[in-house]
Structures are given as C-alpha cells and as structure tokens.
Image (cartoon, rainbow, N blue to C red; front, side):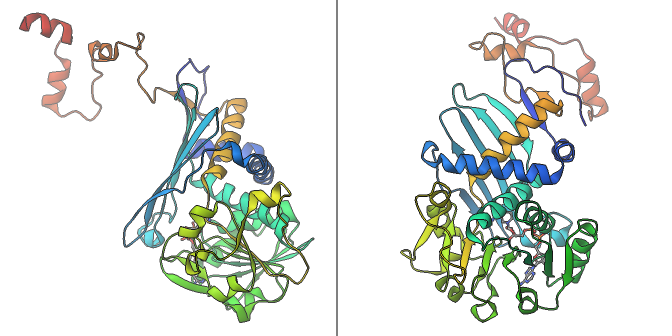
Length: 378
Ligand SMILES: NC(=O)c1ccc[n+]([C@@H]2O[C@H](COP(=O)([O-])OP(=O)(O)OC[C@H]3O[C@@H](n4cnc5c(N)ncnc54)[C@H](O)[C@@H]3O)[C@@H](O)[C@H]2O)c1
C-alpha cells in the first residue's frame, strides 16, 4: 500500500493496480461486490440525471480500444478499456483498463485509477444485480462458460449476492478451467468441470457466458436451454463479436444496459433494430416488469456501460480516501497564478534518471531560466 498524505487542493489521487487490490482486500471481495452492486443500482435508479452516450470505439482486426464517458451535474467519469482476445497468447490480459473521476464544476480530475481488476468487479456486480431482478427466485446452480480473467468474479458475485451454491464450468481451454477451480477451491462453491457447453448448462438456473473470441460465435444455442433459465451474456460486447445464437434471443425476453450501445455491440446486433429489449433501469425503478413467470427465458445482454464504471470509481474513491490508500499526484498543471502557465518553464528542470553521459553533462551545467535567455536575446 502506498502512503497517502493530505491532498492539497487540485491534486489527483492516483490508485495503481496494487492500490486497487489493497482497497478490495481491505473491504473483502464479497463486501466490495455488494457495495458496487448497491451503488450501480442507486445510480441506475437516477438514470435520467446522467448525460449518456454509446462508447467510442476504434477497431482493428485483433480487437478494440474504447473510451466510455458519462456525467451527472457534479461528476464526470471516463474509462479507457481494450478487448483483444488473442492477448493472452502474448502474456497480456484480454481486457485492460484505467479511468478518471473529475469534478464537473471545475473539470479538475479527482481520481486516476487502474481499472482492470475493477472492471471485473463491476461487471460481476452488474451481472448479479441484473440476475437478482431477472432470474427465478433462489437460484442455486450456475453454468459458467468461459473460465478466463472475469470468471472468478462472476462466480463469487453470484454466490455472495444471489446465494448460488454450485457452478458448472466449461472452457475450450482446459488450463483456464483448472486455474478457476484452483482459485475457487476455498470458496465453498460446489464446482463441476464439464466436457461441453451442453453438459454445463444442464440443470442450471443461470447460464453465464463470458468467452472471448472476436467472431460471431454461437456458444449457446436454443436446443441446449430449459424453460425458466436466465442467461447472463457477458462476452458478446463488440460489433462482430457474439455468443448467443439468434434463436436464443428470439425465444427470450431481453434486457440491456443502454439500448443505443447494446444495439451496436450486444448479442442483439444480430437482430432487427426494432427487436424488443428493455433497459434494466426501467426494471429497477419499477416502471417495467422483469421476469414475468417461472417458465420464461430471460437474457441480460451485457456489454458494459460507462455508468457502471462511474459507480465503481465512486466506491474506490470513497474507500481509498477513508483507508489512506494511493498517492496524490500533479496529473494536471497547477501554476500558482492560473493565468501564468508559462511560469512552469521558469523552474529548473529535474535531471533525467536515464540520461546519457553527454546529456548528464548538459544537465549538470548551471540552469539558465528562460527569463535570463530572453533578457540576453534582447
Ligand atoms: N459485458 C461486460 O461488461 C464485459 C466486461 C469485461 C469483459 N467482457 C468480455 O468478457 C469476455 C471475457 O473476458 P476475460 O477477461 O475473461 O477474457 P479471457 O481471455 O481471460 O477469457 C476468455 C475465456 O473464454 C474462453 N473461450 C473462448 N471461446 C470459447 C468458447 N467457444 N467456449 C468456451 N470458452 C471459450 C477462452 O479459452 C478463455 O479462457 C471478453 O469477451 C470481454 O470482452 C465484458
């Protein structure tokens, strides 16, 4: 944990990956998931107070890099996030992220935080929150298809927030399932490794698909399903990247975060633009029904919306300041006279740690301020 001194006005609190993990460990993952789910629910309930837009995305053949902004009247947040399914073969995570919380009154950035771990937490909290309103009451068994970086968080969120007791696992990569079983060994969850998606979904109340493949995959098909199951579809979150066969969606009632973004990125990208979907905030505020019967098939077509990161950043900011985690940094220039930005150039430059011998010699020479140079030139 890094030391946190009193933050002078204008400085930004920086949370590195290690700091975010420290905050989560201090709270306990189950408490953190519950706190984030509550915060997301509270923010979704005041949906009209937010300035919202679909995220901006730059695509390559291998993946996507996205910016996700959202604001209310007091606070602005954005997240930078990528999705590169082949990254794990290069030793990099598929998803990496960082984000900022800023004051809307001044625009001053308040918090800069690494958000890769936080993305997994807020995604799992969002999934569990949606399932609380869309799955049948008292779900006990979940199928978890895709056992990569997000998987532990999904399993533990459904255990902590919905009381799921057993998880049926499948991944095309057996090593991913082994890793997941190892990490969840002490969780109290009953874990079953399955040989196929079809086998994994048998008897499941909830099916979570959280696979990564930049293709129009049909990981889940209609004939695999039983009436009343809830599908938490997390991995189809980008144009040309899906997990559900279109028939699964056609047979279900479909819920989403923010319809304009989900039409572009979600599994419903495969269907007509007027295919009926319900935004989850309408269910949370009671204006629209969630599940309407025990035999109904429900789908949460999750893509990840900026408001979830806004909520996550608020939880991190509150907890980090209370616990004294993180370092205050000069993320943006703060000259003593705000109209004299040029004054920053009048300070002597610090020597560079990686300077070459000739550069070191240049830096060890007496510092000449731009004012003196200017005077000489005149
Ligand atoms: N909706 C959201 O808010 C949200 C948030 C974070 C990540 N995601 C998405 O979730 C997915 C998983 O992310 P991750 O960080 O766990 O990635 P990851 O690469 O760590 O894990 C993905 C796993 O899926 C497995 N897989 C691929 N195709 C499969 C198939 N057909 N059947 C079974 N398993 C398969 C891979 O072997 C891998 O183990 C990604 O697509 C990512 O974009 C969505």
